[in-house]
Structures are given as C-alpha cells and as structure tokens.
Image (cartoon, rainbow, N blue to C red; front, top):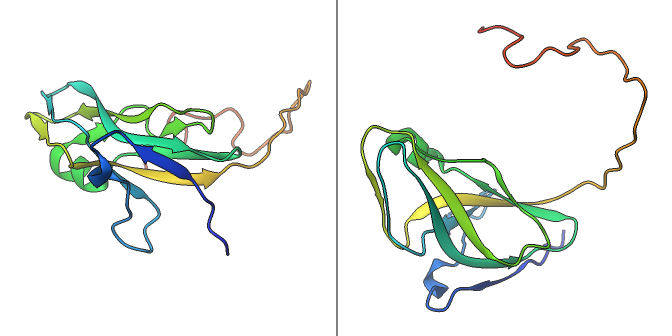
Length: 147
C-alpha cells in the first residue's frame, strides 16, 4: 500500500521538534512543545508545537492526549480529539489542561500530545421526515446504567 503524502514544515529553529512515531507500528505521531509552559492545578494553556501541516483534501488530523501524561500527571487535552482540517495552515497548538492537584511544568521538546491522520469518508447528509427505530432509541448520557 502506498503511503499518503502529508506535507509539513516547522517554525524556524524547531526542526528538532518534527513529529515522529516512537515505534514503526504506532498509530500516532508524537507532538512536542515549542515553548515552556507552567500549568497550575485546574489551568488550561495553549501550547504551540512548531508544526504546520498541509493535509490532503479528504483527510483530517486528530490531536489526542498521551496516556502516560494522563495516568501519571492528570494532564489531558480539552476538546479531545482536536480536529485539524485540511484547509488549516496555521501552527498546530495543543490545549493542555491540568486536571491534577499539583502544578505541571512543560519543557520545550516534551512530548505533550499525539496526532493521528485519517482519511475521511465522503458523506452526504439527507434530510428525512422520520428516522427508523432502533433498539437504543433516544437513550443516551448514562441510559445504559453504571454497570
């Protein structure tokens, strides 16, 4: 299978922050912080990565939390997964949130998020007067119970 080509460039002086997969079989590319940041408990900070993408039409990039940071430091990403559209040419930034009880310090070069690039299906929404019934129906937001 031929790989999909996604063009990118880096903020000047940030070539060392290029997104990479830690292992060949990984689904996601690691995103690294371009600047230091301090996150007090409950704080949210927009952290630049130095990365600019040119995604092909029909693709998106999803920015997701890193499980190790979430488990060990209660660090997550708001609006997760964050969507990067094919037409966006600005710098990829990560909305980090400290859900923990202690401050968290981000150093330039730290892996702060992961990015998955996916092909999107071509979808057409069609208005309908009535939708077919389903077993679930309108149940949501915990409707299946705690167990």
